[in-house]
Length: 284
Length: 267
Image 1 (cartoon, rainbow over the protein chains, first blue to last red):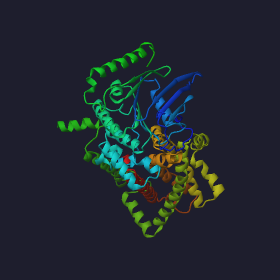
Image 2 (image 1 turned 45 degrees about the horizontal axis):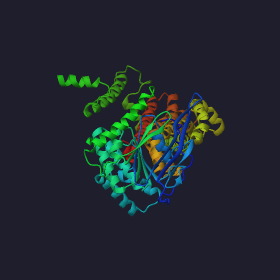
Image 3 (image 1 turned 90 degrees about the horizontal axis):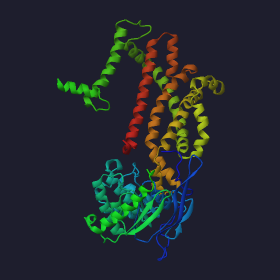
Image 4 (image 1 turned 120 degrees about the vertical axis):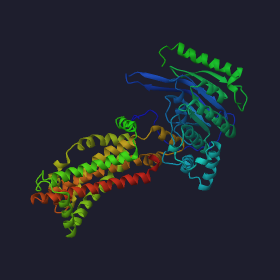
């Protein structure tokens, strides 16, 4: 942990999660976003170069790209945890200037509060906005059931497996009823079997809630399996290289990964990412 | 025999857990060796009684001083100094240390003086404190505070600095204000580390107590051991050391239990 990090919010004003949205405008609009860092040598590094994308309401959008392409940075900017050097991001029509409860986030690392039980973790955001206890209980019970953790309400995070902790993190973010759910490689630290189970669980939870989701991953299968639309990013500078719609029918059935359509999409994305490595021999 | 050999190998393997009984026996053995050595040296008259009293001598000195009431008075006097000094120091060092670890600007202001002062030897300030504060209770308390405060500050600021950035980011996305982050995230997340720091530093407070009481005091365990030295009552010196050791052990265990109770989630 460094003492100074780049993603320190400049001001923390709670944004009303019930911001009004005009039906026509997309839930998330990213317009010409740039992100530059000054390097120790006095130069500057462009992490994101002029990125624009839209995510309509209730869409499951996935951003896939090689490491270092700035896909996580884009998510942090959307969360308001970091400020873009240029451009603007709007969620529900409101310009993002700081983090807020209207944009829930699930991180790659485990970010449960270890001193709180599973129930207390999930109701953390609800307490911050003074929701009455009875209503909190109802909301928490609903999401505990959604992520199959009803029997673990009173356990502490250290008593849970990695997959269970991420399920709590998903429930905690959704319980806050955000306008949009941001997920930063949430299953990246899990073993492959647990990851498959988590993908299935997320698909089911999403079918129920129909939240607008932006999901960042480097796993192509995961991107196609989960997404309505996949943004393929390239690095140096970080940019959107291609937008692919995923026409696979919902709900995605077990074994969809074996279908020719799925495999064709996978090949297309692989080729794009392969190019990326090909024309950037010094890419990490 | 091969069981014994296996156990022996495990004893010599780094980071290997051993049977609980073996661990207990090993701990008991070290006490026994220490006590046995003491008995051998004193009862065997290898060291003159004038320099090394026997365990029985120390026990008798304890009973004698307990009966005439002086032991209790001196213990209470010492406890008073340590408790007041430690509480005052902690009451300022804990919040200030948490702020230092959480706000870069507080750290920037505090770091240079703190890092300078904490290496100054406490003992060298005793004459100054006597000059400034006199030789009363306040002077002894000042020595404890000076000995403990700056160390606590540095250790506690490290505790709050080590709280993960992800945890704080997550709380912002759950709707926390900056104030909420301090009260509901940094505070509770730092609690186990704060209690660990208090547990370690109260041991140092007992160490500085003797320094404080040896120079200018008319009561306390440091005072009676200095007085006993002049009267060649080596049994009383041993008694004072043993009592300080026991009191230190007691406060240490209190903080250990407090941490177990309050921070069960961090065990």
